[in-house]
Image (tube, rainbow, N blue to C red; front, side, top):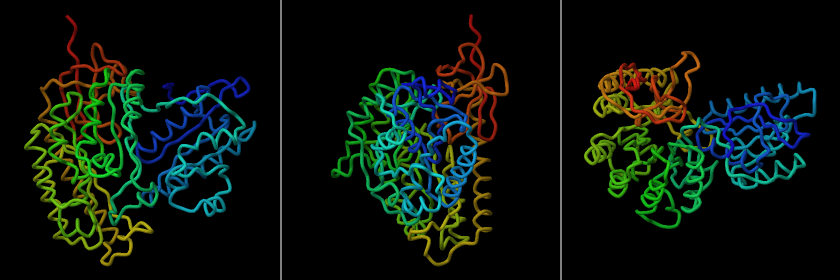
Length: 449
């Protein structure tokens, strides 16, 4: 494994492929990008210079309209910079959800700047296609990890069996396809052997792992038990657990596996049963029961969720129900999105669409509620001693580092600023929590005797 932030490397004439890459959207895209970089071989060297690259690779997101716009803008701006290259013109390859959502011939016609389009369902051939265009063969590797030294993502499955009315993922990523357990264990050991302390498990729905082969309540717990036995992995974190999959078997597994954090990222999307039915959410129990089951089994659990406001037909009463629910549940972390009527989804054609100004007002109100809750919850941590996983040096303050405590996931939650003896990127340290804000903590490690 090569672990570098984007750096300059040798020229292609000495056997190195210089690659400029960007991975947009979710961590699943990041993992796909990392695996591609590894498959291209040990001679890959990342660069921040578009003009000097041999290969420009952009992994796109197209989940909602703003993501589509970001992908298109990124491609066009990078292509413009690429065309200023004085040396040989770099190959521009674009992959991911944009190429999965729209016909390739239409994309190729509309964006002739792109040299190679790579669709999601041919992911295992991406390296082959790129190498053919680069006229190069090389020994493939596993992954070129692009995250910080302390953590890495492990994607356990691709695609989705659910059919939520607002979601484009099944049409882009295809049906559920789970990676074999042995392959995931081998990849996790590889990552641990290269210094990764935290594995963040990702999928469209982790709890649906291996269910395309038939109902198996033990499939995901079994994988978690095996991952928890890997030496060197201190934390196992689960991102994106569908509510229906929060079973007694899973809760017991969290209790039994020491490395498995009691951190539950559950996309509830709403609290009112009328809206949930219209969304086509794949669970039959109410949101309060799910949260209650978790807290009964694991009182210390951290609950993270996301909500959509302004879904078609959402009235003031529906929204007030959601606000009351947030105040009652006091989630550790919370994200709020405004509804987007995505082309091709059932929800896009529903009646009673909510005005954009109302959506934004509701989002701001809900986020203010959560900000107050988050501030109060973090204030309770002041004076406690916590393990902090150190991610990186703080770029602004000498001696200060950015890290996270167990209930802070990378990229999506707040951070813990930490300083003192023993603090360095990749380290796991015990520290005193000395200060808090709306979303972040500050900690000090004790002085050495």
